[in-house]
Amino acid sequence: MVLALSALYVRFGGLPWIRGAFYGIGAAVIAVIARSAVKLARKTVARDWLLWVVLAVNAALTAWTEKEIVWVVALSGVLVWLVQAPPRWSATSPLALSMASPFWFLAGVNGVASWPAVVRIAAYFGEAGVFMFVVEVEAIRHTADGTRTGSAR
Image (tube, rainbow, N blue to C red; front, side, top):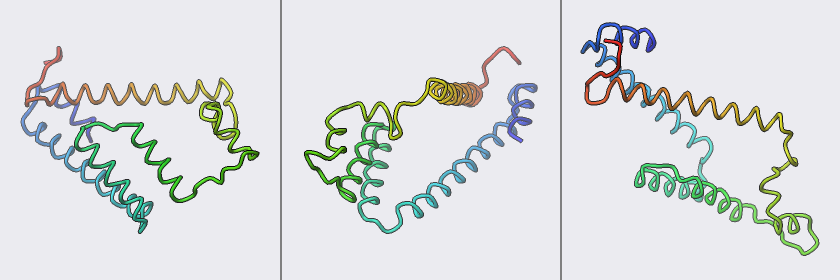
């Protein structure tokens, strides 16, 4: 449906009713994402007060800064891990030895990944990033300030 409306929008030069349809579709997509986020939060966070506090802090920080700060999310995970399942430190335990070296962070839980796996993962996220960038640029280009720019008129 969105693809057909996009083709009509480009072909006929930004008809007002198509612009309105895009705004309506955008609102519907936001509603679906918000509903899914609420359902996911209820299932994963449930009744754990610590997880609700972490969720609220991360949500407030994201709303305030208008960006997701990766190191805050990572530290939140480490905080929950240390509070809910603290490691038992011992001078001879393998965990204590592995925590002393930063290589555990780079190698992963199951050891170093093979190069083909790393290339597949990088290609997947690279394609996804490029796709989302192109979609966002096109959406902004076609709907910014209610005007339409570009060579197809």
